[in-house]
Amino acid sequence: MPSTEMDNIVSDFSRFYILTILYEGSCHGYSIISKFRKRIGKEISPSLVYPFLRQLEQKGFVEQYSKPVGAKKKKVFELTKEGKELCKQLFKRYSALVSVAIEPSLEICAHCGCKVFEGGHKERIRGKEMNFCCIHCAQSYKVEQGTT
Image (cartoon, rainbow, N blue to C red; front, side, top):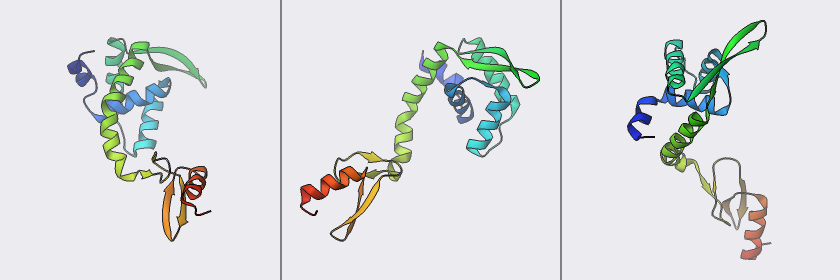
């Protein structure tokens, strides 16, 4: 897909996030709005969501079907194979941006060098607090350093 077409489809973060929600699985419009509000903490207008879903459908990235939800039938939207491929391309495109944004939050394991976003294991060794990805790396580090 040409880059300009991709730019036109996803012209802002809200549309990108709608695609992310659909990539997780099929949803009806209200569910998309609710997930957006819950995760982002901001309202999103139905006047943005539904025209964007129609645009995706016209381009062959989304299909809709009716599904019983309680006593009503709801229009459920699902990414097509092409829509999933579009999302994968977008995720690759923006992964470098996300990496730059989370880099300051990463801890480096003192033993294996892997980057840990959250969790991990901390130990004080020879008076210095050190970061490890897991208790096993901490133990291996201590053995190699002769501090066990």
